[in-house]
Image (cartoon, rainbow, N blue to C red):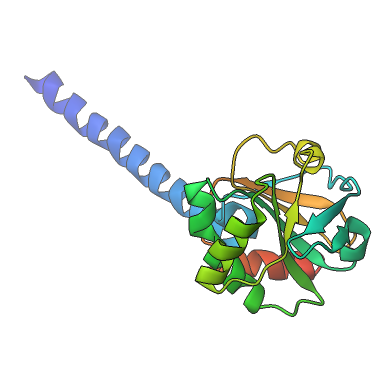
Length: 189
């Protein structure tokens, strides 16, 4: 009976250490997510900061937009389609994010392979959204950004380098998104 009594306190001591050290590790992980704007929004960093491939795409109004015209701005390039429910749900948050920044410094640009301009126009008008919609008719741009699922969003620096990538919907108008855009605008210091 005596030996059982000695084991119990040492077992409790071990359990206490696990709990203590486990609780110390949790705030460290939380602090990392709080201090890293990419992690807090679950945006994967594009480590190489690869320059984006140049492109020329038609806009909803028929005007051609060239990627080189976007240079000098931070760009949030969002790939979506009207048949994609999560894409449509996140679209208003993208518009609200755009409204929080000067469009000469930051621009949300949407790209779709959905070739139904009238349906897209009706959808955007219904929600009161005024964002550029570029048509990737041959899916060349989608392939160059390795879009495999929708929505996919790529964050691009003023120098035209991809630095972040998110697959799946996000609340783009939240504090985390604003912090991420500011972080990139400030040169990711």
